[in-house]
Amino acid sequence: MKTYPVVLTIAGSDSSGGAGIQADLKTMSAIGVFGASAITAITAQNTCEVRDIQGIEPDIVRQQIEAVLDDLPCTTVKLGMLYSRATIETIADCLQRYPLRNIVLDPVMVSTSGCRLIEEEAISAVKTLLLPQATVITPNIPEAEILSGLAIDSEKDMEKAANRLFHAGCHAVLVKGGHLKGAESCDILFMPNSVPVRYTSPRISTRNTHGTGCTFSSAIASYLALGHRLTDAVSLAKKYLTQALQTGADMAIGSGHGSVNHFFAPRVLTPLNPIKDENLY
Image (cartoon, rainbow, N blue to C red; front, side, top):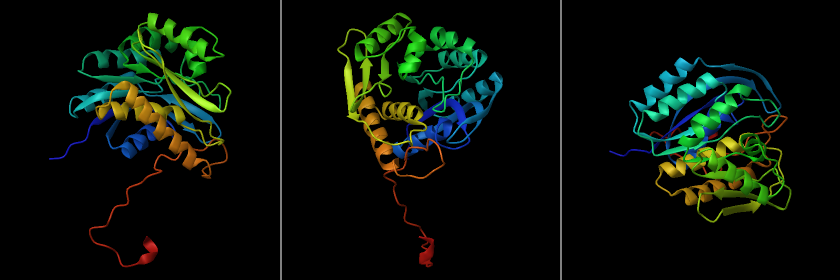
């Protein structure tokens, strides 16, 4: 019997479908793993703004996680928008009680439109409870600045921030350099006692960047679940995101920051009982 690797995403829901749980599950499906989810918060948002957020009760978050991990053969977890300290404490406790091989932490803090997606008191809980458990964390530059307490204006600053995060218990830090200027977008993977690994791609001119962080981290988690080592998982995820951005540049979804194109290489299914009406295809 054929089985798929299972990845559990623990994150917030995006009503517009471009980020959060929705982006995670689309990414996982496109790459070829089975995505399960535990929702931490519900957002009312579109491509222009986040209108409101309602956190899910921590006990319900716990029950979602346990329901998945008690049944499905899941060894990889992706963490996204976690919202509150109580929720983070609950998640940290759950993760310690299950035999997980890979935990990818995307420290989601601010939306593309500028809305804060995490309570202030929750940031310290991320540092103390989740950083030490994560296989890799994937902050963009503003997030890395918040977590490290350092200003980042260059690749050298990215390395300084990563070193400070190592002292906080991180095992590996992927600092995403999209906020820096230049013809190329460079993300750098830092691991203790290793030479930093640079991942570059041409900077793509597009306003459709909604959900890029969620997509990237979910892709990394998916490739880890498929058995790739971390350096290769990041490389493959970078290629996936680049193609999703390139093919989504001309998509007209919403009037603000639209979604990337998660399904740029869809598999067309042949119906078991083909319908004769050609207008349906």
